[in-house]
Image (tube, rainbow, N blue to C red; front, side, top):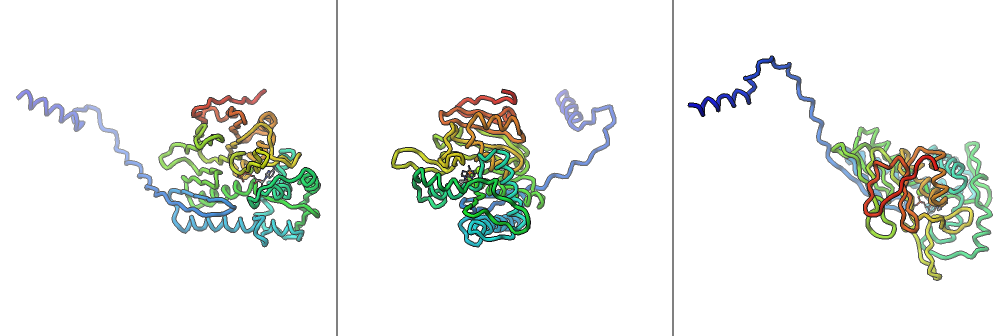
Length: 347
Ligand code: ADP
Ligand code: MG
């Protein structure tokens, strides 16, 4: 009998019948968010393998994104003879599309802001080293000095509708084009209502929103000396762009390593103490341009640039394996193995 009474009491409690206070008015459960399926597309463009993973995007939307990058590549490619950039390089007067003009203006602004550490007119020098064809060679000093005569972005004016380059000059937007392509894809996906996506454009990572479960995306920072990672960044709605001496390089007959990031002040691969620069920011094109130019600057000048301009964060890896992160990444960068030093906003 006692047992039955106890069971009844428990049952009443479970049913809530034992409460004396009135029940609050029932609130309907919030509409469950529709489960978003992952969809992805991979394609080759801008000399790299690109993968777009987006939750809730259909095949047509991803196909449109790929086609937009193909179109951009056709405008900007230095090797496709019919591209606007190739025609400019051939000495033609070219009526630039809005996209090319926008990117060219953005690139020139960054060249100016970085005081020429980024210089889109360095292309003839990059070519001479064989970085455009993978037929690598060490150009003679006199050849480099001759080619440098035609380098200098400040000579490029963009007034009027028909653009033309000063004689002998050639440009290449390769240092920022992939970042721009990431911005384009991310904005197309956002317009389609996608709130969760991650793009890998040959090592440039762009994130839209957070992961589908609401947690931040985790992006690894590669160890330049091995296949592993030196740290992991937690990001949402950001571009994470790395320029590294380990990405494209060759070892010359002299045993020296020569990489594809060139110091415009010398015409030689930039060896200013950094081996990898990762930029985290809102705009992929800017992050891309900055990853290249801050690599050229070396740690001290790059740090000064960050302090003076802001608007982005960075992970610097020096050629002796030290890792430095700017203050804004203190809580988002998780070191793996190698400890990191934090660069504050004041020296
Ligand atoms: P990746 O293309 O590997 O992502 P970057 O974004 O750093 O790397 O761009 C490097 C490319 O930019 C080089 O392959 C070369 O074509 C060009 N380049 C190299 N040095 C410079 C420079 N100082 N300014 C502008 N473009 C550069
Ligand atoms: Mg770059």
